Amino acid sequence: MKKFVFGVMLAVIGLMFAAICFVHALCNPWNYNGIDGLLGSFLGTDTLIPFVISLLVLIAGVVICGREAYRRK
Image (cartoon, rainbow, N blue to C red; front, side, top):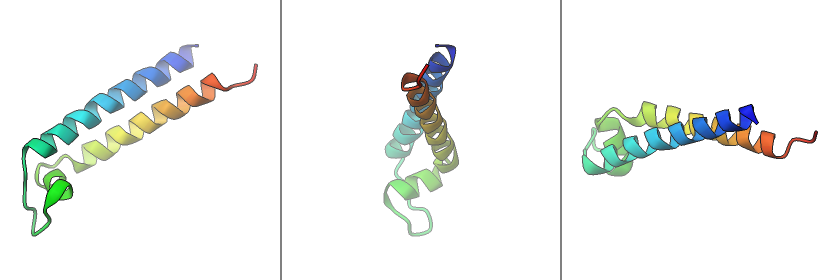
């Protein structure tokens, strides 16, 4: 049960930071060396790497939750 709670906490933290990076990139449109759109906004506001890291944390939390939820005892 402790690992499941840890996985939920990781997933929630990853989701929060990913949402913050996503909203920040959407609210600040940018043209980064001819790259427009969401990728240009991520690159221009320097939030691409934190967004990817937060998505990896989110995925790790979901994997931990899935392993603990369907583990055979």
